[in-house]
Length: 132
Image (cartoon, rainbow, N blue to C red):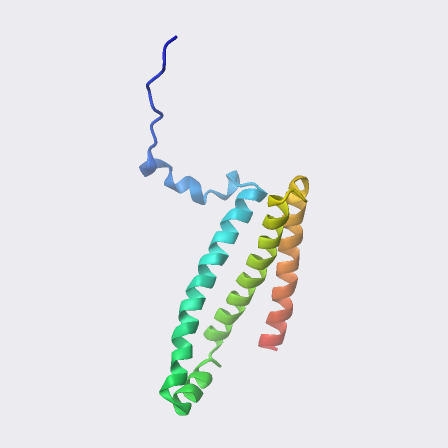
């Protein structure tokens, strides 16, 4: 009995672009990628939020100046993206929890699409309230 000692070669320099190829992704791959992006965005927001809360220590005028700055449309778009990421990340986390405990493993694809629809609807309601 012979043992094959050849190891598969991994060429990271030529295959990195495949990670961004949307044609090869299935629903589970998209769920994973979107969940990671939303999670990273929320971590970034948390760090920015802590910096903003530090403005409270600089006095009432600094806080009011910051509140006036938040009326900027770019800041409002950022707020919308944070809420959209939070809604999606939370709902997708519930889907992952259900699948992990075996309650919906067979229906993961359908539940992912429900998560997407609910995320879009929730984000649309928030956008309406924020921008109108």
